[in-house]
Length: 267
Image 1 (tube, rainbow, N blue to C red):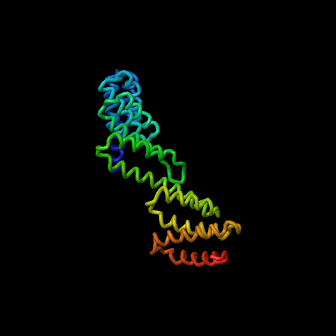
Image 2: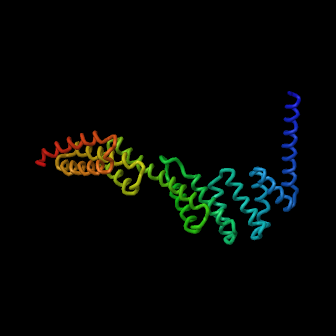
């Protein structure tokens, strides 16, 4: 068994070395056709770095030809498969400019947009790339409304919007958790206005009640009455929207306290 394993290891080593030797030979001494064929072979075998190195040497010689179009797209795909999404997005854009009538333009535009999706970070980080990904996806949808990829695009765009929504909601909650209730009211209202069908709607409206109430209770006298009235409005909206909420008893308790405070103003 051990001899068999040693034989397998030796065979694989020889195979790898011979493959590397062949690649080196083609890279140093091969003509364009030999490099082209080995680049295609490398790509098909998932050896994308080898493919990229060879393609970079020969693409200029095939520029604006049918073969050149295929080779350039393969070059874009090699960078994409390596996970270099910034670079591959750049090359997909260049491919579209260089071969605007290619049947691969739809693929290039979609994959270029997908690069931006891959570059979109976690929701708590800067969302510039997420916005860019949304723009790129929307461009694809507008240009190819009958594409078989439209459903996929819509799902991706919904996920991107959810990330932006969560970013905004988390920012509002940061104000709340740090005791900046006025800023929390503004941010929470902005979130619900921008995302009226948010899956976090109950939580947003609940924290609006809390923010209004805490802002009112801690207000200077001349602002307190107005803010207490704002609290009642937020309570009414919450109860009307989520009458079966687990927070309903707490919110009704806040209503009683708020009404008691308003009575001090003769209300």
